[in-house]
Length: 231
Image 1 (cartoon, rainbow, N blue to C red):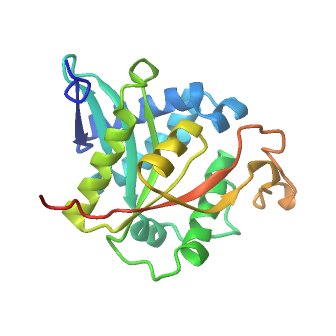
Image 2 (image 1 turned 90 degrees about the vertical axis):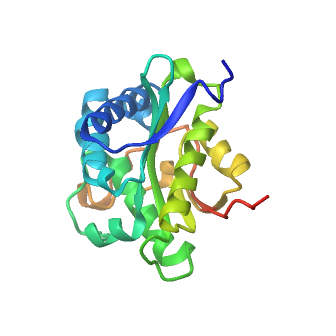
Image 3 (image 1 turned 45 degrees about the horizontal axis):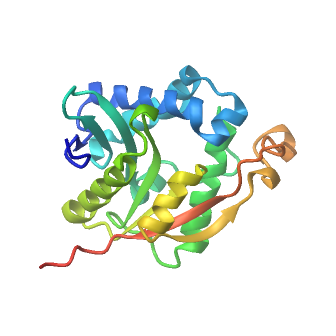
């Protein structure tokens, strides 16, 4: 079967699929995502503290997507996204709040704040910036173009159904960074080196949890969701 037809790409629209996707992402992140591997985060911990709480809160926005293997019906990839405006209204950046269970969560929260206050350069409005949070593909299905098609389907859906004009994403995986920057024409804005990042919410602001990390920098990447040209 043609690889483009071997999979279907669907909105995550129910709790059972949302839970399956959260488990998939937790397992793949623990095994392959550079920051998680460095921090030795278990799938169970990531599921409980990151992927499941996230999708449980946002799946009703109908902006997150999954990829399903057509022949078996198995969910083999997922990506979570929400409206950045809504996310900031629900969870305003607070430098004085308690530290997150996973320090990378606080690093990304700071990067979101940098984007809104400095990188974006315009007023944030509803249905304007799609916030792409986390995504993963089962290793057995990697290299078949699933990750790129899944992200394209998600962005096209957000643009065509709700009028989103941009997408924001932060990535630590080099292959995923390549997809956003080279294949989706993303523009890198602020770039953070985790080795020099100070976890201000922990240990009186003196903690540097990633000082020995060797996985490279993490950028804010802005995608412009341009309409498809009519033929």
